[in-house]
Length: 245
Image 1 (cartoon, rainbow, N blue to C red):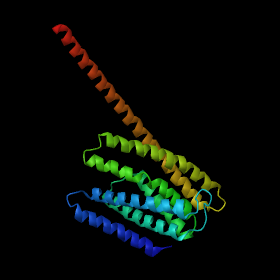
Image 2 (cartoon, rainbow, N blue to C red):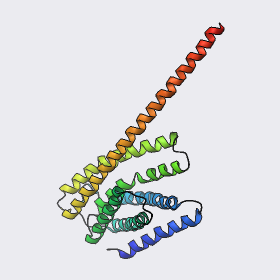
Image 3 (cartoon, one colour):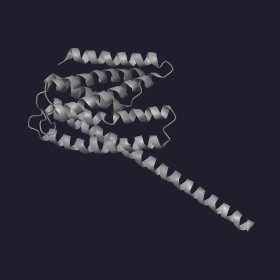
Image 4 (tube, rainbow, N blue to C red):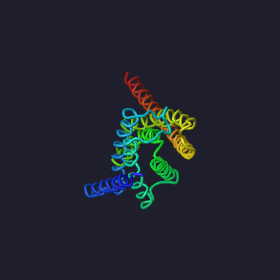
């Protein structure tokens, strides 16, 4: 268990948060915390992408194998962040039970992988898939705060978030879940952890699908209203022209 690395990671994320608080003094604590979350999301996606696609081994074929140094390093960085984030969420009470359950499951899974010294490759793969959409989620929040969400950019961010979540976290995640369950090397406790994370992914997917349906329906309704308004205006203009003739 790399206690020193995890502790340094926790201190590092806390210092980054304090730096943002000192820099953006007029912003709320949540603004600064989300800046930390955005920074972590970008960093951990790049780091786990290197671990999964370059350093190896391939998680779909080597689930349950012994952790490498890079896998341990990536997991320590991520665990330190989750300790910081769950502590912040508890202090400010900003998240609901589902998100807190996700944080608790993530911390437990990473702790198990580090304690047992195995299953690091599939854990890094899960982190990569889970955090890939996180920068988009934070961007969406910042756009709302800046009053830029109701725009083409906001629609593009939402669409990309939904597509990536469905294809990577649910689609590819299903394949990863199957490989973990069928691997003879993966321990039972890690398989149970995989069941929990996969179940939470579907809970989020249902909520996202509902959001996508409501937003697309509202957009269509607004488009129809604008279309009817244009038709009425055109008819009024044509009527005036006919009268003048």
